[in-house]
Image 1: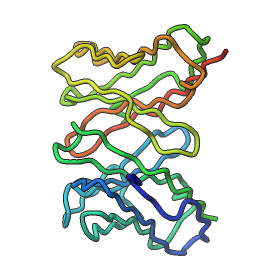
Image 2: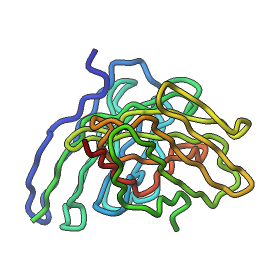
Image 3: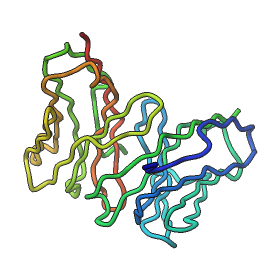
Image 4: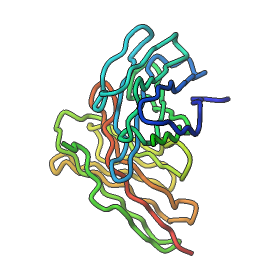
Amino acid sequence: NAGVTQTPKFQVLKTGQSMTLQCAQDMNHNSMYWYRQDPGMGLRLIYYSASEGTTDKGEVPNGYNVSRLNKREFSLRLESAAPSQTSVYFCASSGTGGLRNTIYFGEGSWLTVV
Amino acid sequence: DQQVKQNSPSLSVQEGRISILNCDYTNSMFDYFLWYKKYPAEGPTFLISISSIKDKNEDGRFTVFLNKSAKHLSLHIVPSQPGDSAVYFCAANSGYALNFGKGTSLLVTP
């Protein structure tokens, strides 16, 4: 059981480059999320998708776009990477009942922007 | 503004003793609280949760206590084991996603 799978695990970008983080879940969950984790900052929500076909901004959406491609997949795109976007990115998903069900996280994607 | 606060960045406890991790929140609309555990280079994993209609929830060695009037919750680990060494995040349901604290790094020494 793969759960939540993120790719790539590690990436180094130059300032101004673009890239897409891919996420897929195999638990038939309705809701999916992208968080970032920075030292001393905890986990902060970037975007979320409550159900297929919907996306909404979280706490720190600037500089990012998302696509809920289908029920399984939720991608995060950096259009023009900046050093401030150096972080660890976590994709997550949860089932029906929203947050009263456990949120399952992927293993993380380490992104460095130089 | 941080709505979920974990004011202790780190905690060191001897094996076999009790670990107590604390969490405070500011938003009285939060009605569901969770603790997540995170090892280095891994994603957070769910540990235990509590609804605001309860004041205690227990799961094996882990117990979460909720004091709504004080807007405070705590996670007790008894007895602590070296494998419990990890970062623990407190989180609260904000309606559409979880609000996380900054985490407390627990070190359990033999």
